[in-house]
Length: 322
Image (cartoon, rainbow, N blue to C red; front, side):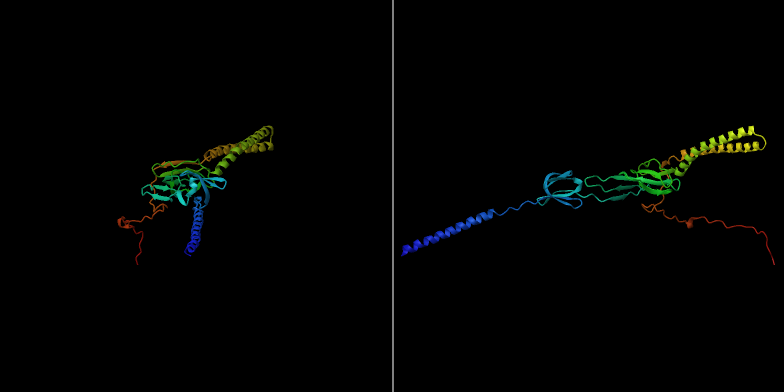
C-alpha cells in the first residue's frame, strides 16, 4: 500500500517540473523579443521654422548640412540653419544675429557710429557719419545709394543740413536738374562737409541745342534775303529800290539773329551739360541741435546785459500859444 502511494506521486512531481520548464521557455523568448527603443530621426530646423527630417550624411558646423530625405539628398548652407538634432539631442546650433545697435558719440561734429544687423555667420559692418550742409539752387536734391547697392534715394533738398554715412555713394538730382557724377563725401574723421552745387538744368540744355541748331539756319536764310535784295536794289529804280532796301534790312536782321542764337545756345549747352559739385571740409560749424534730428533750438535775448538804446532827441519846429 505504501509503495503504491509513492509510485503515484512520482508522475505528479514530473508534471510540476515540466510546467516550470515550459514557463521558463515561454518567458525567455518573450523578453528577448522586446524591441530596443529605436533612435529618433535626424532633424534640421531652418531659420524660417521649417523642420526637415531625414538622415545626416554630412554635417560641417559653420558651413553646411546634408540630409538624406527618402532617396533625395538636400544640402543647406549654415546661414539658413537654426539647429540640427540627432537622436533627440541638439548637436549643432546657429546663434541668431545680434540686433541692430545705434551708438551716438557726443562730439562737436556729432559723429555717429551705426552697427547694422548682419546675416548669421557674418560680421556686422560699421560706418561713420558726418554732418553735411547742402548749398545751391532750391531745386537741387542730394541723393544717396547705400554700400549694398540699389537705387538712389532722395535725402534732402537744398538748402539743408543732415548727418549722413561716409561709405555711401551720392549724387545731385532733382526736378528739372541734370544729374551730377557720383561722388563720396570728402570728410575724414567725421569732420563736417559743405557740398556746393552748381545746378545744370534740363530746360537750359535743351534750349541751347535748339538755339544752336536754328541759329545757322536763320543766318543763312538772312544772308540769302540780303543777297537777293542787294541784287534787286542795284538793278531796280524808283519804288523797286525802296523795297530792295527793306529786304536788305530784313536779311541783315535775320543774319544777326542767327549769329546771336548760336552765340547764346553754345554757352547754354556747355553750362547745363552736367551739374557740378564742389566740397569743402570743415565748414560751416554744425548748428546747435536737439539730437539726431538736427532740430534748431531757439536763441533767447539776454535783456539783463543789453545796453539800452539812448532816448530820442528832437527840436520843436513850431509852437502855438493861446
